[in-house]
Length: 266
Image (tube, rainbow, N blue to C red; front, side, top):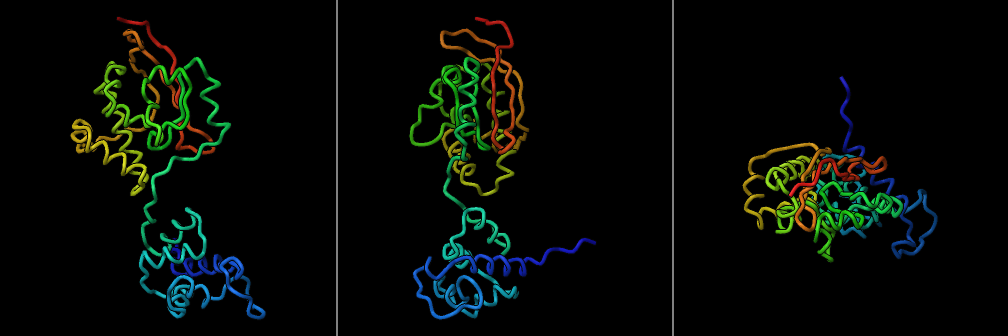
């Protein structure tokens, strides 16, 4: 039988490794003689984090004690942990990671330029929650007002449900919107508590009766390519084939390319 990892021991080792990389100079403490180990002493870290030295020592020793979210947050701040290190700290302590402010997924400049290179084929890159992180002019024209909001990233699900123009553009709006919502649910299940998903889902449930009704049905789908009938400016409906490619470096980011796959209809 595979032995379960000692989370308390891992927590202590993780705290110790991060404590030893913080120098007194970084936190404004004076040098007080020679130090047996690099970085801060346990007593110094405990003082800066607003907790007792004994309690902190117990944590590093891997003792079975309860620790609150507030204490973990104070330790993470004092140790200058980045976002991924904070999440790791909370998980080792048996807590869910701290909720974070919603922020778009990072996209390297050379990756963001890919849709521009695919012009005149409509193309865009979407994040795991359907934020539109990059798109070309052809996609802008095919999906009007998608990028109309200036204070936050465009979002394909939000546009589909909350912008009236989407119902004119999508010839088969209801099945398309249902499928999109089912794919969003699948992706949200991989990111429990992530504000990028919870805030979007709350907005959809508040502002769209259809989203509220369909969300309660718990449909799920995987993200994939397919065919879609879209109405161009001027009224003609065209069938498009769309293909989805996952980025090698960031597999939850998806490049979507549209090509005309049918004859224009009135």
